Amino acid sequence: MLEYASYALVLFALGAYVLLDGYDLGIGILSLFDRSDRRRKEYSELIATAWDANESWIILAGVVLWAGLPGVYATVLPGVYLPLVVMLLAIVMRGTAIELQSAAPGYRRGWGLVFGLSSLVAALCQGLVGGAVLSGLPHRGGEFTGGTWDWLTPYSVLSALGLTAVYLLAGAAWLQDKTTGTAHERAGRLGRPLLLVVTASAVVLAFGLRLADPQHLRFDQPLRAALFGLAVAVAVTCGAIAWYGFGRRPDWRPFAAVAGAEAAGLLALVAATAPVVVPPDLTVHAAAGPHGTQLFLLIGVGGCIPVVLAYNIYAWWVFRGKFAQPPAPTGASGPSGGAAAAERPTVRAPAEDNGPWAAVVGRRVLLTLLAVAVAALSQDVFGGVRAWIGPAGIAVCSVTALAVWIRSDRRSAAAGEFDLRAAEK
Image 1 (cartoon, rainbow, N blue to C red):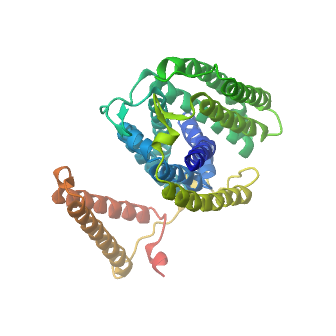
Image 2: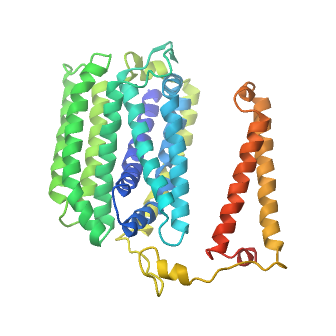
Image 3: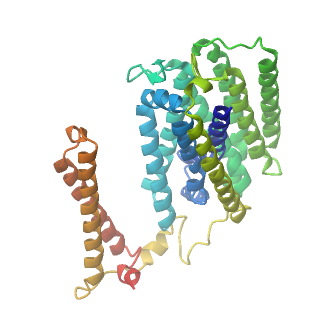
């Protein structure tokens, strides 16, 4: 029975990720369609409070799959390598954009565009992965036997669009709860149209699952049918509460209702497909690892989950209430502080004070050389990589990145955004 505990941990971690990071991604996508730089900056600052904690859950899910259900890991990951790698790269770019946008004075449209596009790409890739798994990946004996593009099916594309709509709905609900002014009003207006889109997507995906899933869904079993019907009823009820709550107080009600609908939808999906994890025939029992590994995993991950939950709760508590933009500096002419930026004195290090610059450049050169050395060592340890990326290619990429890095800092220092001499003290 330990394998079912591992399965429950995977479901819990994935559900927590969809609930917590889903609204993050939705807000990022919504920022692409907002013309106000002030609101876009507000969206980024909202996400900067807890995005890294929200993404911890997907790491826990991957660890449990790797050790607890290795059959699923060996089947799913090779089958969805391409969308999964693109998703991870998008998450990395998104985190970089959030932090650099938060640190920059005013609003930087370049980083804002990276934030929005990477959020969209990550959401679409997650939907493609989920739809590919539900469509069934070719496998034999717990190993993937398909091709490179087997993950791309009509159902996976529909799943990508549907999951993106769910994230947009969660993002609008979160914005109503956490913002004021025009951002709050805009979120209230978007909520109901997005809820209609999500409802239509859920109906299409539910009926399409009967055609896409190669296993025979056994709704003739009374317990399965009862659990599925109960989960659907809860989801419909939560949807009705969200519909009524958008644009009305209390502002927290739509997000709570959307979260309940997401949890109910996941439970309905489990009730329809369990114990099969990867259609048509890879079950939880067949994919499970050894008993000792299962026990060790449950103790280790079970001990981590309260810590991650505590971190999430603490972050929510610290940043509770409505978000308020810090007051603009005196003389600012707009949300980006154009006048203040124009009046900010240019900070340049005098010619005789090159110590801090030399120290910064020296540290970064050493870090770059260390990275090249680690990459070269990895090529020797994991043979065959050099056929794709040679040492010369790594060196060229590293030196180019270093040059761009230093040039960017010199431009920022010339604009007066920070003083390297003060940073060194």
